[in-house]
Image (cartoon, rainbow over all chains, first blue to last red):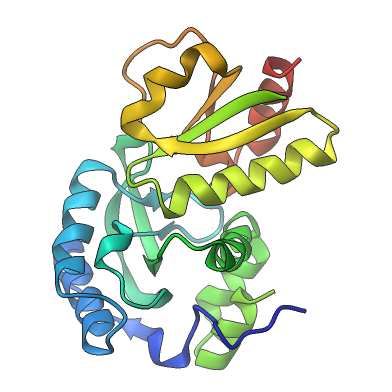
Length: 153
Length: 91
């Protein structure tokens, strides 16, 4: 069982029923949450927008589609993953196939530095993406602590 | 030990996570190869010393070594097929 005192998941970074008018609006407003709580520098937001333009992060996961916007470690103060469950999906382009579109319903905005401990946690988070049952449960959850539990194994 | 490279757009989160997942899968399958996350810009430099390239970004050029679809390891969709392809390349 891993020690969670340096956890990258926090209830204050789990947003439920989030609404956004566009992908850019979504990325800016989610980024602002990370900035406001001190996890990232203000430059993180532009970094995420730029990265998304060049290397989109939509993933065609089964059951529920997701996106994993992120940018360089230089913009990050404290590693974390913000999880936003959207009221209605927002269109992202697909990672590795940018002409394809993904209707992302759950967004994992990642703020990572280069250290190894976080990679383990990021790895287990990403295992959830290939687990359709877990993704569906995540999509149906309205409880922040349940969301974190689902993402923590 | 054979080398396999992974590269993505920013070299921090995605390629490192895929590298560690693929390393684990290769170990489970008793394949003697080491996966390394490299900078997207330096991919060409590793061609001579690697047996496969796990790509997470769109590849527009052809490479002298097999290119594996790295996204499959993130979504789980098509993972078995790409893993088989990778194991073949490591032989």
